[in-house]
Length: 296
Image (cartoon, rainbow, N blue to C red; front, side, top):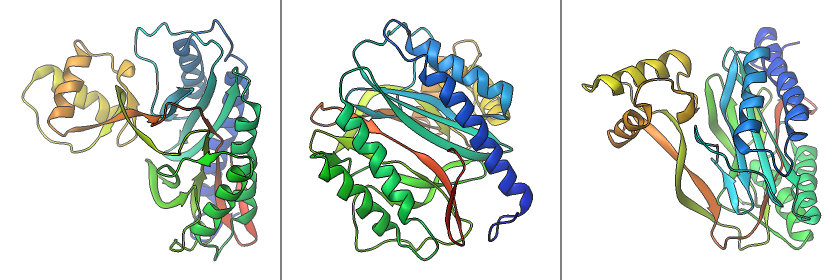
């Protein structure tokens, strides 16, 4: 059935992306265990998404301990899981319509921190409906996380998703705010609480493996031109991993395009105190009587 401004076909594409994501997430989280490599886990999920849907909405994020987002393995990464707190964030698209979800796999004995993010997500989803302001949703998230004795990550937020756009408005804050956007029927949003035992701020690290097309324009360097053609054809405006680009000297060309402002890089975000971060996330469609969770 149609939902507000979303026609039947569009709604079904969002739902199909969510169904695929749930299948892939259930499989992939079981692979996160000591001795497995980050690259093995990421490539398994991305391969399954390629089999079941039109593609990844963004590279599989595997954020460990103090990392909060934008961490994906490099082409030759042999990092293994140990006693880590692992945030697994996966995105799927069907004809550009996106599902985005995350879970925390606790190999570090941080069960309360993991539970805080999960319960904050549940509380946020209970609040969502037409006419509800995003600040109210953020207050529900903050109340739960602080109730566990932790801090929400204040400078990260949930977000809207639209066709071929993995991060758009409205933002869903992880704290209460007086000003907010009123949700309406047909909004599709990814709600993602982050909890930490630090002060609750993230900043950019030096590692950068995820990029997206910022400005499409002509470039003179041959390798850079080949990379740009590959990105435009395969990923459009969706984020991609450097390891996905099978072009000679791809890393050098990507670096050149990033310096020129053609590509936008996403540095890994880390908790500023070096403290642990947990995450939970679902994508929902706002309906007349609340919301439909597409990734549940």
